[in-house]
Length: 346
Image (cartoon, rainbow, N blue to C red; front, side, top):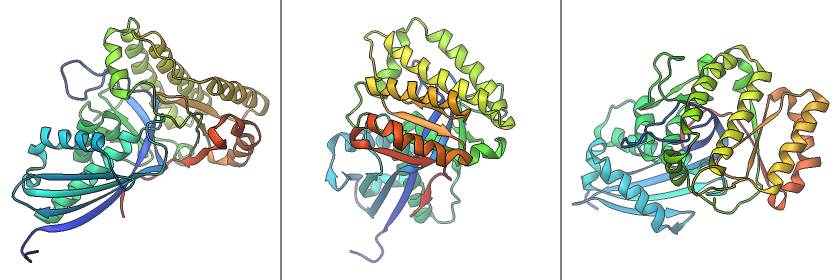
């Protein structure tokens, strides 16, 4: 290798996130622009770790491995994203990239793997840009915008604690083009919140998020849903400031059930919940009624259940999960996650 050849390596870890107010539906004819704003917790343990070795070349080259194995589907998705938005990464036109990626959680099972993987990819690319050009400070707003172009929910993963994506009159500076941090806008109780993820199924989702978003275009309840989401966002922002856990639980569960109701009344329709999903929800409601602990659930576009609760109640809730809910999980698997600090360089 010529000593003057530009080459090097970067590695970033970026988390998934779990939406409280759901992003479900894109504006037609636009690139990854949401129909309504969304609010999410940034997680800690559910992450993607991505490393990129780069070397100067006479043309763009891409080699991708997931968990150490070639993955043509992922490689094609990444290649299409980079070619479509090469104007943002012009230095890549003469780079050969070797990308290795690994998730700490099951892929395509209702945990937002695209959010963590695409935000990790963007953080790596911006780090390469910094190394190649020199002296460029990493801009989280720009990172969020670029991550959005790869996967909508990925734009929220670049921020710690909580993030808001989508323009709303309820928050100055909010945008459809990038997410904004809510870290300084929330009560301390939410900065240490827990998310225990119960793996009801580790199989690939019945419908991809991309296909699910597209089904909203003909959904008869779409406009009502978007209006409701806007109201929920405005209310939730106040709830997060005040530390109102009762209203937080109410909005969180309503959003989860609306998401799945929309899928059930789309054409074609999908039932993404499993019998054990409902058993967990019913048991959780009984537990909350008996103990007055402000524990609630949410769901992504899949059967797995996210159990959300304050740090102070960790011991009692985790004992409840082990005693009553593990039986409903695949091989008793669940992930004890919590709110995290966003991407970091490895």
